Amino acid sequence: MADISRASMNHIGLTVGDIDAAVRWYARVFGLRLLDGPMLCDRTTSGAERRRDVFGERWGGMKLAHMLTANDCGLELFQFLEPEAVKPGENFEYWRYGAHHIAFTVDDFDAALGRIRDHGGRTRTEVYDVHGETFVCYCEDPWGNVLEVVSRRYAELSAATTY
Picture (cartoon, rainbow, N blue to C red):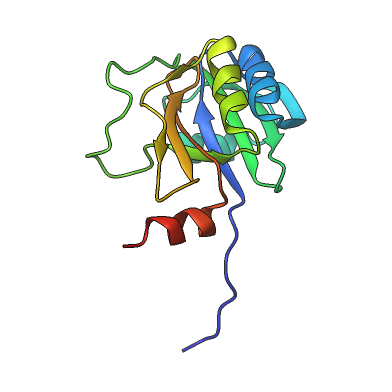
């Protein structure tokens, strides 16, 4: 069997209803840095053929922004224009295949929850202490994307939740 190197997370894509507001929100709440955009991408711009291949024949245009976390993981924000994105009635369909949340590790847990609420997001759950001094809370951005806020890095969280 071939030896393979371990993969690292490159980026996550989220659909939002207002890309300019989303860029400001993720910068203010989580300190993400804007790398590029927001930019208009449609059937006439560079990369249109690739995007239609990815999103399908209905795709006609979007706005796109690239942001970066403190540990160099990308957050790609999409505001689809054609067809226009719609917020689902149920935004936490954990029983369906696919991603259902993204998690951010924060240094100041309480301050992060405050920033989420102060900037139009909300907390979905209570704050849970997972095996002592490891805090988690599920939240939403203003567009309904489900976010988990965590007080420790993933390896530490995973070790703390092992029974």
